[in-house]
Structure formats: structure tokens, C-alpha cells
Image: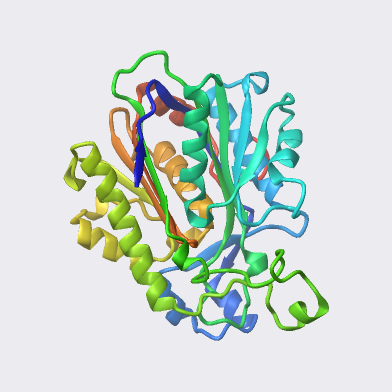
Amino acid sequence: MKVYRPRGVRISGTGSYLPARVVSNAELVAAGAPLTDEEMVRLSGIRTRHHAAPDEATSDLAAEAGRRALACAGQSRAGVERLILATVSPDHSSPSAACVAQAALGLAPSPAFDLTASCSGFLYALDAAARAVATGDSAVLAIAADIRSRFVDPTDRATCALFGDGAGAAVVCGSGDDDGTGLVAIGLSADGAGAHAVYVPAGGSREPASAETVAGRRHFIRMAEGPQVYLAAVEGMLATGEALLEELGLGWGDLDLVVPHQPNRRILDRLARLADLPSEKMFVNVDRIGNVSGATVAIGLDEALRSGRARAGAKILLLAAGAGYTAGAALLVVDSALANAASRVPGGSSTRGPT
């Protein structure tokens, strides 16, 4: 894993958005899911998740999270010089959802593009944003957004209860100094040998959409080797986190909070045991929002800041592993300006409309 250490780069504001509709396990069971409510909780720890409204697309979720991040940062739209959107469920195969979100946000013409890194998406977007700021951009909006509910087979035991919809965002900018706060380091990796462990078989150039692919239900998420994916997620996050911390001369005990991707509660519990992390140092919201793919870390960071769990001076490890296999980790030392900005801006992540 290559570790990048941006100098004088910080997050000035965060925002998140969860669609208004909350879907319980009981609703999934009533719709024909092949698991009971109790089995869903036992296997995944998930009790509810949010599903996008019929008129909502991924760019809508992204734009709402972006508005909230800009408001938190006190950042003008005119000052945003780049928009990076991590997603695996864009509005269309072309053009990018980032271009649609850029227009919805009323940003000035500037670079806007999607990137795909599955559940590690926000860490990849954060890395790209930090590099852009380090090479001259004044402010970059990094967003992760997904609507995974529309790609879930309600009859598939492996995935029917796991996924939800949502978006998270961060404004990345220069700090003007290097006082040890802000984005200290980011590390990314990928191992393409696991590319088909979790994937959507049809809809791309290898297997374009057709009447046959629709009839064969090949446009849904498939996870044929659940136990292997479970182990890969635990090992991927643990190894990625340890590699970044070792590079910085730190250990798990030096951290104030870990904000990991939220694949399911069993994975998070095992990660905490292996890293010897007490419960108060592990941020968990999977029980109420499910697995929101690349957006989970961004949503978690925003919630941690707004709830006061990520205070000024805190060392926060952002951590993810996902399909591909991809993985990422970032160390954020919260500066007082970010902590104060998050506490000033009201509104929860599931309130529809700008805050």
C-alpha cells in the first residue's frame, strides 16, 4: 500500500443525507425476503435501512450531501474548483453523475467526474481531492453516494437485508499551515483477484443489458462466496489500518475513534476484537442505515462530528474495504475549526431539503 502524506490539507466541512423512507426488517420479510427479522439481526446486525424515493437518483442524494457540506464549511459555490463523486450506481452509464450533481449544486464550470472504488469509494475520492488541493485547487468537494436498494434481489439470502441508500460529502481545502491537524495521511490499495467476489454481472460492456439478462436477474448484486467476502473485509480493513498506522509510527491504541465502512455488525465486532478497540472507539451505525457502499465512511464521519464523538484534536482513522477488492485508510486529526463548524450546523442526515 502506497501512503500519501498531504501537507497543509484539511477538511473544512462535512455533510450527509439519508432518504426519508426507513425500511424495517419486517417490511423486507413482508415483501418476500427469505430471512426472518431475527435472522437478519443475527447475521448482519441490521434493523433498518433507508431507501431512496422513486423520484430520487444518486445525483440527488449527492447534491443534498454536498449542500450540507458546503454549508458546514461556509464555503461559497464559486470557490469550489473540482467535484469528485464516488459511486457504483450513477444516474446513467453516461454522462457522469458528478456532472448532474454539479449542475444541481449551481457550481461554476470546473472539473467534475465520477470514480468507482465500491465500498472504499469515499477514501479514494478523499485521496484525489487532497492531491488536487496540494497541487493548486483551493477547494474540492468530495462526495460518495449510492442507491444500492435498486440493485438488490429481494429473494437472495446473501444480500436482501444488507444494503441501503445515502450520501456523504466533505469539503477539502488548504489549511495555510502544517500544525499536525487535518488530513495527515491516506493509503489506498486494490487486489483485482477478488473482482468477482461481489459484483453485478450484467449491464456493462462484457454483458450488455438485454431481455435475457433481465429475465435471468443478472442486474442484481451477487455475492456467491459470503464467508470469503466476510474474511476479506475483516482482513482488508485490519491490514490496511495497520499499514497506515505503522507508516506513521502509531498503533490502534493511539486513536481516539475509528470510523470504518459498515458492511455488517459481525465484521465490525471482529475488527474491534482483533484491533483490541473498546466499543467507545468504534463508530457504528450499520444497525440503522445498513451498508451504504462507498458512502458509509463519509456518513459516519459527518455523524461523528455532529454528535461530538470527533472533537478537536482527536485522531480519527477512516477505514474501508470493498469489492474489487479495494481498501483504503486515512488519518484525520480534527482541527478546532472543523469541530466548531460541525457543531454549529443543525440538522440530521435524514432530513430532506437543504440545511
